[in-house]
Length: 342
Image (cartoon, rainbow, N blue to C red):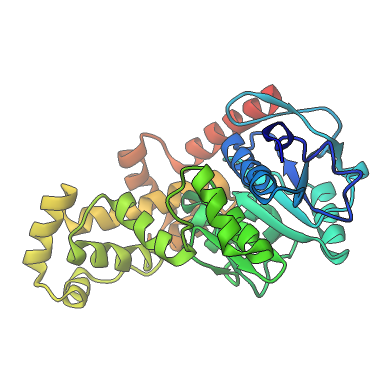
């Protein structure tokens, strides 16, 4: 196949619907262009390396017209929801406000195409939309790490993992960013063999196709910025017990250290005491819930291990410079202004 043909996937879709898999990317306002481009590039290179049209693709918007991405570039979608073609795979692409993109039209469309045999998935915060559509019930799923805590709080019955992507039957979710490359490569490997997928990875200068579990562990080490296993284990315990904080002596015992030794390690690696770090973990969760859910402040306080909304507000102001309600109003106003600009 000529290199000039690798970008023709959407143009050839109408004539090749029966001979190639058709991917549809639902572009929500503020979608991350990196994730969309990464997935399409993998499909295009699979066509190039495979020497034939294995995949076709198109972009879809809620309404006719342009959709602005997170970086400000405008994309003219190929279809609107009402005239989108049959898809083998549909992917919801959302940016920082995915929890606000679950419109009735989008939810109805997702349920309809899923019932018609289309595999459905989401990138980054698009998992909020799939959850609202009821498509993640009884399945493993994931989401961008920044949304994980409020997502779990909003949907406590869902099996939310820390993997960079999850595929569970005809439904899949991806945390976003470059993890989309690994997800799409696994699709290529499943359909056309690992050899082809590895050749596509080589074209992308992608060292290896990352597994969800291995990458999740690596991401946690990078996010924490520490290598000490005792500190990492203590932080993991803290992050998994924010609603009902574990006493620090018990955390020390679980790490195999004395409380004094653990305190010294925290100061050395994180620049603060375990008590302060634990408090900041709970405050970060509170901020995510304030910004990304409609949970009342009192319920937010309880979900983060604070005994009252006033106690939460006291520490919230000290940490972030505003009360939870002030933060919620400011964040909502900024999001509304952003959506208006889009």
